[in-house]
Image (tube, rainbow, N blue to C red; front, top):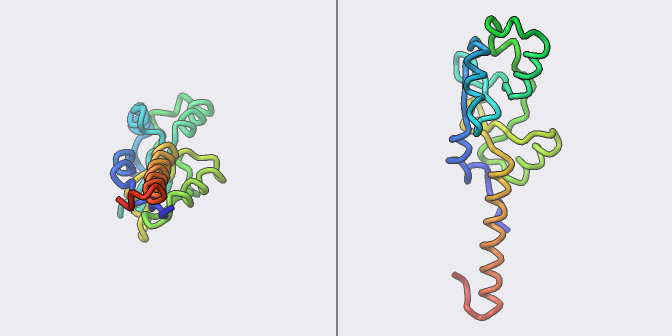
Length: 150
């Protein structure tokens, strides 16, 4: 099977990317997370580099800790700073492996300057890998049956 790269699902990854500045209010972040397709917001510095992420879980934890301060809390107060991420040139299998080891469903995609370009979702990655497997299976079946390569 060909090694499918993260960049092969770039359009899907870009559609899941939502960024905020480190000084964005937590109320604004929570409004972004209301979208059912967004489970992770990437927090960026003034140069556009990723400095952290905020998930729905981070939001629930913050509300549990101090509900009354939500209006004055900013993204940098709540974000996860030690972020597992991948590059567009990583294979989808490697990205899925990183997600599995960390227990994540989403993985930010960054460039060499830590600027985010997307968010890989495990379901999207699995679908792409399954589609590739089915295509290669059909090629092999056609070859063996004497039809030849497509």
